[in-house]
Length: 180
Image 1 (cartoon, rainbow, N blue to C red):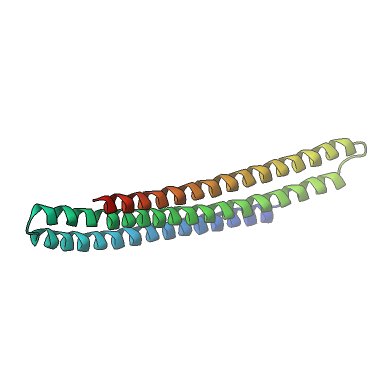
Image 2: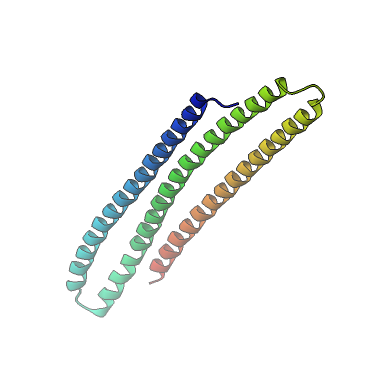
């Protein structure tokens, strides 16, 4: 049986976890706001510089050359922004995943302790039921670990694909600006 102290301790741990996750979420939002402020300042400076450069153009040929020269840096900055955005989202998500995994492991330990305690106090002849319960818990644990591994592999693959697409976009922009 659970005691009042155990229930209170569990509730306290849940509240601490909730506040910890809330702080991690706010930290992710802070990073996102910082990124956007930095990107906005850089974009404003670029617009100013580009406007001044366009106002100093003397003919159409020079304008076309200027436009071609602006395309590649824009693509690189866009790819960089996307990478930073992905990194923020990925790291914040990883922190949530880690917190969830810790909670799940603790919950599993507590549940196994409860099953073991019930097994010790079970009436004679219930050994088979206890063994079935332990087997079910072990199977659920193995399934959970398999899902965690699959999610990790999918996340790694998504990150590799994102990096490949970003690199390809920058390379395409470089090639396009060289053709002009």
